[in-house]
Length: 159
Image 1 (cartoon, rainbow, N blue to C red):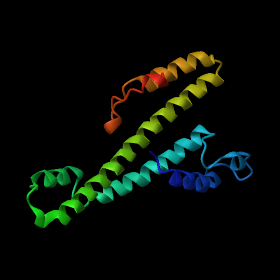
Image 2 (cartoon, rainbow, N blue to C red; image 1 turned 135 degrees about the horizontal axis):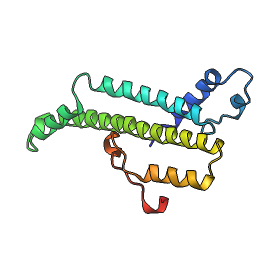
Image 3 (cartoon, rainbow, N blue to C red; image 1 turned 30 degrees about the horizontal axis):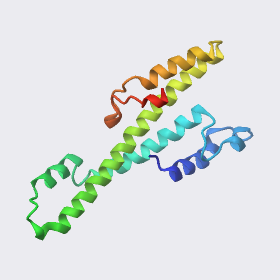
Image 4 (cartoon, rainbow, N blue to C red; image 1 turned 90 degrees about the horizontal axis):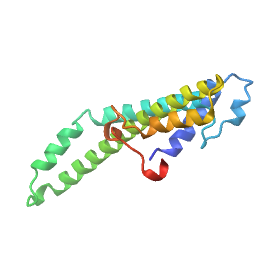
């Protein structure tokens, strides 16, 4: 799940730099609802960059894979390192959450960019039903290069 507070903050800050000064979009842009695809792509790219920065920062001392190996090498009988084990579990979980956010941001950006392509087709006279079918095929297709979201197929109730 995205950090809604961070997204709201990014929308509130970027709406003044993204749109011209007298644009009606500055007043229409809501902090919790997407209204403009280009603006949302910009916000999601910023969100991705922030989360990517913190993920890389968290990986400076040890990588996620190294934390997993350390935890696997610890024995259950070793009570003297309980605090150390809990610290490593916390560090690993934090990295997994950040990695998940990076991958989710990539996934959402790819959907927004596809929606932007379909929006252009609509403005050039294509039927809404045709664009709906194309978009449905896109988001129902297995995704590549998106970490744990790779191969994601949405549940049937969303089809």
